[in-house]
Image (cartoon, rainbow, N blue to C red; front, side, top):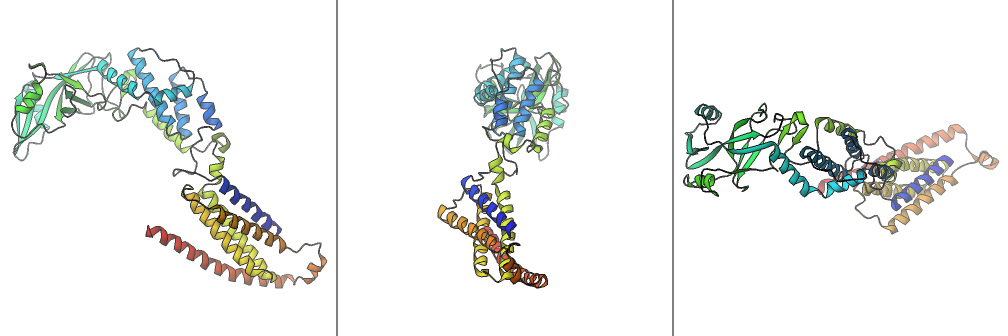
Length: 445
């Protein structure tokens, strides 16, 4: 019983420490994100900003491995801004370390949007194709669904409508010119997709999504068949005519590229403008980041600054509760075998085990529910009492009176086995009822 008493005393200290330093664990992963003030994060933020791209990407992968859900995207935005400034020939602001780059990415949303628009304006220009060849029109018309009486009608040069039951579904021929020194195409992360609007009005936009193998060579024009993204009216063709001819009042149809919704790639220049975000990404970097997420727990908890959270999370509390229940059962069985303090052992075992399980449930809920100090003090006092009771149930080999009064080994074994079976059955019934109560409470919500 000395070993059990020491185990119970150690678990009591664990429960007491868990009250002082709760888990505050968030997320589904067992390994929590590294603390922002952890040694690993301090070292990474203080690292001089690398000069080559591979080393800069290594810093991003490390942020992903440390599960920095805010710093990693901020740094990726800075990486993208750096790549676009380099393409545009802009000077790079002087930054001392990785931490400065992360901070710059946090506040650089407006600059990043402006850089994105400048990059697109540098590599591609769009205008309405008012002289579409008949053969091209037939080719585009073949890809349309002309069932249920739909008819393709010309409205003005460069604009057609597919009319059915008074509804106009518009198509626009948009000519895209490659202004870059390398072919424009698609990549898995940045498919060729252009969204253009009339005079910048987002509610009058058309979407151009050519096939995935479309390629625009340097200095060449490619005509794209684009679909209207808005209902421009059900009454007459006057509205789309006005839409095409508004502003200048002549045939100089002006389309503006919507930089935020468009995407393209210049693979030979390692240039990509992705849709749905301006974070720096490549297939290789995505693969490395995914591997880093799976290896998130490789670093020790001291370096990550997460020892306290990992020690007192829900998993740690449930393990401690199981160990406590088994040790408390051993105390009860020993008390029944020796015929001493069985009722007290049972009461202390049940009270302390139920409270340990309740503390584990609180940790599983991110310590969002309070565990009052009055209840905590009573629970810890009962834990200490059970540990003291376990210590008092020992029979030292140096005490010859205890050795003389002790029954023969066979009798001790029979008594212990009988008590273990009885108390084990009672324990299974009690814990089973407790489990059913927990499940019923969960489903009732």
